[in-house]
Image (tube, rainbow, N blue to C red; front, side):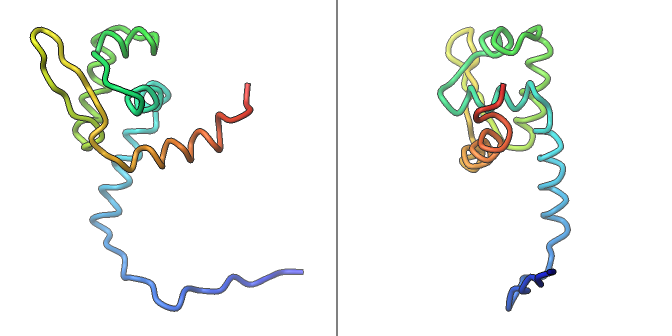
Length: 109
């Protein structure tokens, strides 16, 4: 038996420009190393070297991943002496990561 979905009473017109920006940033996030970086940075700040080591990639590769995500506004960096620390700048990443972890990581081996 087929059921019909009720349409919302009112729906805002699509802002295709905003949806395009969202799609670009989601495409940027769609990489296992970048998702792992988000996971780590949601729990504190890290240097490029620390992130690279945890993710199993060279420092220059980690830097490129961070640069791309910083361009989308996901992270920001802060220099302390010779070290640069990265941390989450986009608070919505927490709920996005909860969705990813709930769907793909909880109870999975």
